Structures are given as C-alpha cells and as structure tokens.
Length: 342
Image 1 (tube, helix red, strand yellow):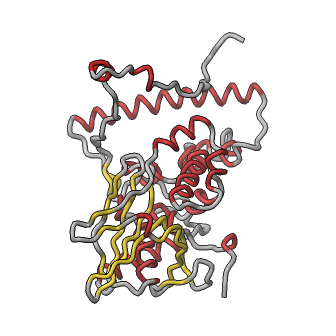
Image 2 (spheres, helix red, strand yellow):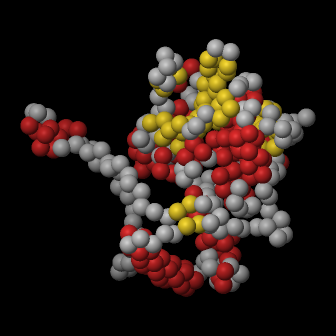
Image 3 (cartoon, one colour):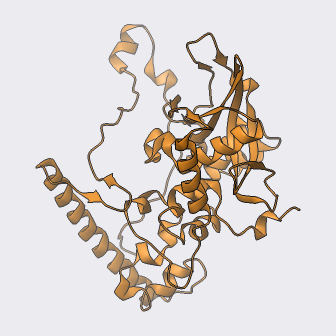
C-alpha cells in the first residue's frame, strides 16, 4: 500500500535533528521554501545531474547564482585501503523509507515511519561483508551542529543499509563550501549501538504536536529551518497573542498600514540593538570563563575557529607578470535599506 507524500504525517528524515527536541519543528520547516532552500535545491539537482536542473539555477537571483557557483560539487573518496569511491559511480537522489523494525521500505509505502531523499551513497564489498556510505550535501560543515552524528544521516544510513542488506553503514557529509567529506564512525547493524540510534530516529520521526506538546526552545532552534516563522522563537511570550502575533503567523499576507509598519520597524530596530548588546556581553563573559550549556540538547555555546576566506595577493600576481585587473570581476548591484530623506 502506498501513501501520497503530501498526506504523510510523520516527520521527514531531514527534520529529525530538530523534531527530536521540538514537536512543531517538522511543521515549521516543511511548509515554506526560502531563497536559501531554493539555492540548495538547485545545487543538489546539479550534483545529481537531475534533468532540468538548469531551470532551478535560472530562477535564482544574481546574488544567489554567485553563491551557487562558489559551492563545490561532490568529489571522489580515496578510503586509503585500495578503494576509491567515485561520485560518478554513486547512487544519487536515493528515495528511502524506514520501517518500525528499522527495515527498508519504498518512500511511499504505508510501512515507512519516516522517509527522505539521500543525496548520494555507495555500496562496497569487503570480503563477505557489505558496507554502505550514506552522504548528505550541506552548504558548509559549520551549518550542521551534530555533524555526521546527525539523526538525519543515521536515518539515511539505516534505511540505505537495510535496502542493500548491508552489515555496516558509514554516515558522511559533503561540505560544499570547503569541498571536503566529513565522515562519522561506522555503525554495525547487528550492534546495540545501531538499535539505540534506531530508537532515537523512530522517536524523532513520531514526535508530533499534541495539545500539550507544541514548541520546545533550546540551542537546537538556531539550526531549525522554520525558526523565523516560529511564534515561540521569534516573539517573546507577551507578544505572541497581541501586536506581532498575526504578523509572525502570516508575514506575507497580513496587510500593514504605514503607521503599523513604522511602529514595527522601530520595535525591530530596538530589539536588534538590544539583542546585539546582550550577545556581545555573553560572548565577553564566555571569554572570561563562563560556561553556557543547554541541558536539553547537551550543546555548549562557545567560540569556534573557522577557516579564513581564500584570497589572492595583488602584489604577488603583479610580480609574476599577471595583471590582477584581467581577473577581477564586480558583483551584481544590491539593495540595502536605511533611513533617507524622501
């Protein structure tokens, strides 16, 4: 028996990192697609060589097309044991469903407790054993708090392994900005660890809103796709059913008078400056030794060292006899908002 995808109730694999904490995360992240999601969809389609992917690229703005071009397509993997995983040989855009007993089911099967589209993966034989490598493409390794330990990756790995009757799965991330793979630890399907992970995946897939279980705030909110549409996250409780409540629930369709817009803008500017001051103070306290922990997710707010941006030395190019101007381009014009005289 097949279930239409638009009537499927449980949470998708891509939302499991958030629905494990918040019952509303699946609803918030699944109903809208912003520009970032459209950019990601276009890059995923290019990587998979999906027919017509160029149309998704053409629909992007000039600025997003520039970001698109900077993202690197998945490469090959040398495992160092004589095995090279070539992206051209991988299974791409794999449709997966996971059953209640951690088996594989077609994505539209009524037996699937959760479902998803894995970007690409490989099936490898090592003697009598079968290993699968399950990969999701992310814009950057810094956009995934849990890295390859994410429940999304584990759900892909469990379902992909079950589909191929594999003994082991290895979850991985292709970081398109850095152009690198980030691998997790191998998980043996017959182990207690696989069963523990599987129970977490199923619990997150079936963590749905009830009258008494709606929004749950915590460190996980910063990565949630729907946080800017979430009344619990976006608004203080005292505003949830007053001035800004309807505006947050339906930001596009709610009509605004010039007076309302002015008041909202002033409120937003005040809130932004207040928030920035609070964040700056917290960061300074952390530098002095303060520990900020979220007990629910187990995450800590802390400084993270990031790679610097790539750059070219103008002086070095000129010394090599290369005119930098010949390789310099100007980005597309952009619009900014600020107070000006009418």
